[in-house]
Amino acid sequence: MPARTGKQYVEALDAAQNNVWIHGEKVEKVSEHPAFRNVVRSMADLYDLQHKPELKDTMTYVSPDTGDRVGMSFLTPRTQEDLAKRRQMMKIWADHTGGMMGRTPDYLNASIMAFANASDFFAQDDPIFGENIKNYYRYVRENDLCLTHTLIHPQANRSKNAARQNDPYLSARIVERNAKGLVIRGCRLLATLGGITDEIVVFPSTVNKTTAEDDPYAVAFALPNNTPGLKFLCRESFDYGKNQWDHPLGSRFDESDAIVVFDDVLVPWDRVFIAGNNELCNRAYMETNAVVHMAHQVVIKNVAKTEFVLGVILRLIDAIGISQFQHVQEKAAEVIVALEAMKAFLTAAEANASVDAYGVMLPDFAPLNAARNWYPKVYPRLAEIIRQLGASGLMAIPTQDDFQHPEIGEYLHKYTQGANIDGYERVQLFRLAWDIAISAFGNRQVLYEYFFFGDPVRMAGALYNSYNKQPYMDKVSQFLARTGSAALQETEGHSAAWSNPIL
Image (cartoon, rainbow, N blue to C red):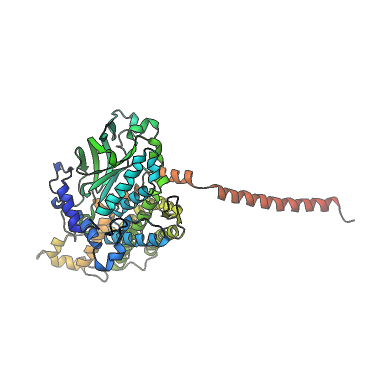
């Protein structure tokens, strides 16, 4: 199958009958369930963008294996031009959601591409695992599958690693190896989009490291989501069944997050990439450069998200006539600086890209790493700025039904008007701002961005420990040595003058 349409995505999702639970019930048909139908439609829209005639060459490319057109996010970049092509495709998807969907398929597509090109890394565990990851990449690309993934263990007792929890089967682990594959039992967190995807990829954390005693938990594999024994237990939906006027974001883009349960799930050997090797798990993301390609997608998404938030803030400022106040200008400028910084990180990463050991054009990780460490601090501030500028206007937000009611609608049109905008339009804009900064959907976005790549403190530690600090320390040493030498010469000159006075 070449690049999918939205209709094909929905049909495959319903046909799979994945084991998805939400609100205390098993979901019979995901595309029609109130918690998922709207986000499924949003996902279908993304797939349909691949088939717009004017976007064909931006959204897809010709598969080297089949000659079919496949999603551009699967492209193995060999040149800087390839990176630009992939970025343009990813930006179109991100713009379509205002950056409010963090796990659109391009995120993991780029990851699987990187893993496949680094197949020799996985072959260190077993040569067949290297072949497995290459075959899996081709399979996902040629079928345009939508993936979810899990990286972390249940929180439980965080002072102990997975192997030392009271229940050794709390975290998903290998129970058995047999002729057919690995048997996995336990739990993993936190599969965003899990209930509305085709397959799940289980990989180690990008930040948390393990030791040899965690080998039973040190796995990497992929499975169809309808595999027997695999269950997705989803959090409460933030799509409350409201219309898009009242809940403009929550009614479209609530991705859902799921606890994933493995109830003695068989992972066939041809779907295994790492099997009980903590050392490879600790090194997987960095040595394959998967984290770099994932970070590239994330920064593209965050540029789109910051552009969208800036647009909302500027519209809000204009709607209520507060642009003349300096504190308002300062806050808007803060968002502008955030946007320009993110764009600069992205530009630098592509401009300084180079070919890695696997022959893949690799964006420069330094600016991407800086961006992914910085944005978790920035996004909560963007939401705070919306709250500060919107003030009580973010609470005075009647619904569309209120405006349309014959008895009270007239009052609302009059009393909620803005400086140069009528009441209906102003409240619609403020409801959008509310859905970014105050609603359950908006607060989940703040939490999500803060922990996107893991605990920001651990990420900062990883950045500090991996950063090449020596050149900057050497600059200081060289400076001190140089100025010390000049001072010494000057001192010696003065000493000579005093010892040989002119009489």
